[in-house]
Image (cartoon, rainbow over all chains, first blue to last red; front, top):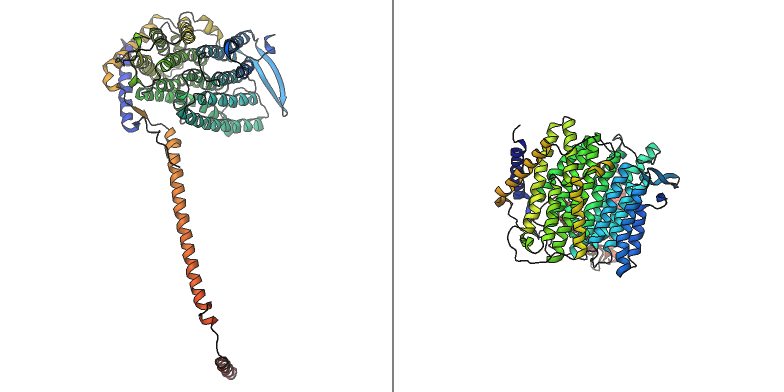
Length: 40
Length: 560
């Protein structure tokens, strides 16, 4: 298939980035999330 | 002659001796011990070198074949490169611990029985925990304890499996294992914990980036690749591993895309790369097993190179977050070039080591008519370029100008990076020595016109996708939740909730008990107290009257 690597690579990356972005909506937290110390 | 000395034990002994040395003697031993281990591995002939008996079980602590030689060799090279890179490390614990860790990893690869495997397996957990711990920060201490807990859990599972296997078969030999009993499933689970497989993958990106600038370089090499080695030895062709590997590949890419800390990006990418190896083991043909073994070899070198360049940046700037970095190519040109070579190798760019190793796994999927697996591997190759090949160098060395102007690192770090960069390019161009070391005869030519063109198309258009979608990849000060949330947040919450809940119930029960007791005491004291009815003093006449009444009743009842 002509240019398979090219369009497949581009499409795969686009899908991965969008999926990651979508997952990030649910799973992203401030990077201090785990820093809060519990007081005994 | 060579079989008199066990290369792994030489490294362990050197690690212990290093704790007593300082100055030039320490430097000399740091470089000589791994070099000696390399020479010993290369000189060791095939076959059993040592055998003995422990508690009535036969053990083979030192035996060599092609597969074990390949892994032992790259572990010894890695110990040398890591030792060189860490010469300026101020912690006196880190390099000795790393040598014990590396020597134990070699010990696993040269073990011919499950008891020896288990002993070195646990020694690795201790050595690596000390490497993380020796970074000396509070966060490193906490991370090292979480790391240790996960690995002790994995060790217990493995121990249970080995005990069941030995009880069931009567054999301690470390050979191919079929998944036909609960004990064998436990062995597989114990191995997979160390490989960074789901659901516990989070231990890796949680712990490794907390080590020092040089500690992470050591950590990247041994634990996961020892797991790849034992899976290659015991579970080749286990179909389940294809799915586990594919999950790890995409997990690594997606989490790395969301990550801001440069060393956590590279840690997620370890899970991703080990995924390729696990898929190769799961496919189980000679081509795919060769591919998995070769990829472990090249991966150790380029991942160490990537983490050396990240470590050099951390050493010079003290910063780890992409949001704080950028524009470092101006004053750290050598680090940038070496980091980029590592990034191209991990992306399997032609003329780098990753190209000659990873392609074999894809080819095996094609040969086995696993079209979907092949397509997913191709998509994953694009994703690797995305998250490690471009993202890491772009955000660290280019991107915006962060205003930082650090110089390239000291000579020892520069030398280690140049050495590993040369190996990455060297193996990509002259791959015959690597192919000769593989466990099965190799009938594969990586550099065909079609393959090179297709790979270049894939990678260049992945690059295009990265820059077209750059606004979506803008770094933020965030982390991404993972399964470690369950033991870092949910576990403590549950403990707190239980403590609070149990406390409340306990208080309520005690309060109710006390008030019941108080009420009972009131009744009793009203009856029996000073003025109580039963304690009152009655006159004699009253008593005589009551006795007369009772006698009357008695008479009535008697005659009635």
